[in-house]
Each structure stands twice: as structure tokens, then as C-alpha cells.
Amino acid sequence: MSRPGGFQNDDVVRGAGMQAAKGAGLVALAIIIGIVLLQIVDDGSSGPVSAKSDRTTTTTQKRGTSTGSSTPAKAPDQVRVLVLNAGAQPGAAADMATALQQKGYTNQPEQPNDWAGVDGKGTSVFCKPDFEREAVSLAMAAGPNTKTPAFPDPAPPFSDNVDCVVAVGDPV
Image (cartoon, rainbow, N blue to C red):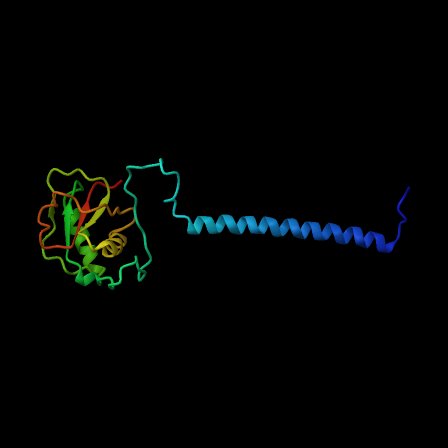
């Protein structure tokens, strides 16, 4: 049996096809938005419990944001910073100290020095406990790919009177 042709039946078929295309388009748009949001929100730190890594990761944070402490973050000039050469070319620690001073880290009670016996790869910021937020800001000021591992034990040389140590190693 054939369908009777006519203007109205063609419009119904065309309307249904258009609605199906719109629905498929909305589903595709929702998937794309979901993927984009996952890329923005997911920091990659979650995963299977057995998936452990010995790598030190770089932490980045927008200036002026909080990491959860109720006390305000210290301004760069309130953080006592020591810059040590940890395997970089001679003069790299002095250059880093100058660059940090230009970014407001002017409270450097010790002159840049060498951290003998350390062959660091890349730049690392080590801050004493309760200076985690300052470590993030200092790492951002020190440059891309700067790591923020825990403060080492034994402590770096000359670090008794400072809050954070910037160790300048060989570029990675």
C-alpha cells in the first residue's frame, strides 16, 4: 500500500528529520562541552589507588587565590628567600636572585651561593612548613616548570634564617 502523497505528509517527514538532526547536534554539543570541562577541571591527580608516581609535579596557581589556609598569603617582600646554585652554570643563582627581586622578592637576607654536592635538574622551590602558598607564588615567579617539593632534611646550606630556598639546577 502506498502512502498518499501530498504537501502535508512531506512537511511532517521533513519536520521529523529536522528534529532528529537538531537532537543529534545537541548531543554532540553536550559531549564536546563535557570534554572541555573535564580538561579544565580535572587536574589528573585522581585515579586508581595503585597508580603511584615518584615524580615531583609542578604546581601552578593563579595569583590571589587561596589554598585553604585562614591566614592571608604573605606578600613577596615578606618572604625571606635564599637562592642557591644546585648544578646550574656559574652565575645562574645570582641571575635568579636579581630576577626575583624585580618581581618583588626583595627580602633576600643571604647572598646567592652554591649548594655543593647537589646536581639538580631544573629549578625547585623548597619552603618551610606553613609557607605552601608562598611556595606556589615563588615557583610561578621563578619560571615555568619550577617544582615545589617538600623542604629537604637535612636543610639546604645557609637556610637557617629564610622561609624558602630556590635551587637553580641544570635546565631540563
